[in-house]
Length: 279
Image 1 (tube, rainbow, N blue to C red):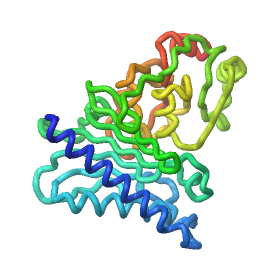
Image 2: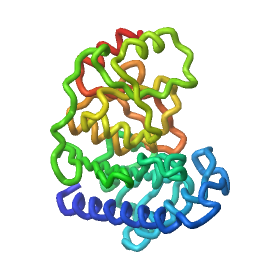
Image 3: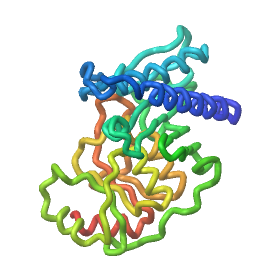
Image 4: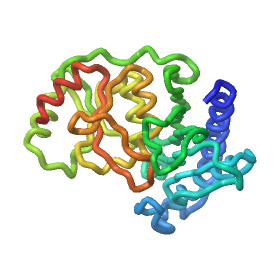
C-alpha cells in the first residue's frame, strides 16, 4: 500500500471503531442484549450485541463506495461493491462479547487489512499479507495500530514499553488452560511469576506488545485467525516474537475457519525458555 491508501484505511478503521462503540453503548437498554440470536458463520453463537456491532461496522464500509472483501465473525465472507476488490478486511467487531454484556472493561474491535491490488487468487492471502492492524479496547479508550514495516502505536504514540523479561520464572503470562491437559503446560504455569486472563484475545495480544503481559500462550489449535489477524501484526511491529506452539512462523490463510495455536512473547529469550518447558 502507498501512504495515501494506508491513511485512508486507517481513517476508515477509526470510523468503524467509533461507529461500533456507539452502537454498543446505544444498545445497553435492550433487555435482550446478551441473548443468542443464531449461530454465526464462524460456528459460534451470535449474541444480539454482536449483531449491533457488526451491522454498524458494515454500514461504514458500505458508505465508503469502495469494493472490498469482508470476512467477519457473524456474517462470514461477503463482497461489498461491484468492482474488483481493493482490500480484504478481517473483522471481529466485538472481541470479548461476554465481557461486553457483563460490562467487564476488556472488550473491543479488531480490524486487519490486506491489500489485494497485486493478488491473483484471494485464497492464497495469508497473515503475512496483512498491512494494517487496528485493535481498540472500548472501555479504556486505548487504540493500538500497526502498519507493516512502519511500527506500532498506542493512541497515536509509538509503543516503547514492551517488556524485556527473558525467563519464564520472571514472566507474567496470559494463557487459556482450562481445557488443556498437559504435564508440561502445568509445569510452565507453576513456574511463571503470575498468570492473568482477561477474556479478549485481540486485546491481550496487544498487551504483550505494550508490556502489560510478557507472553501469551494458547497451545490448542483453536485460536481463530480472525481473532489475531490484527494483533499479530502489532506484536511483530513492536519487535515481539509470535509463532505457533511448535515454534513455526504464523502464516495461516485468511479464512474464517482457519485456526492455530499461538505463542507470543516480548523477547526471543523468553520464547526460547518457554519452548524448553513445553517440548
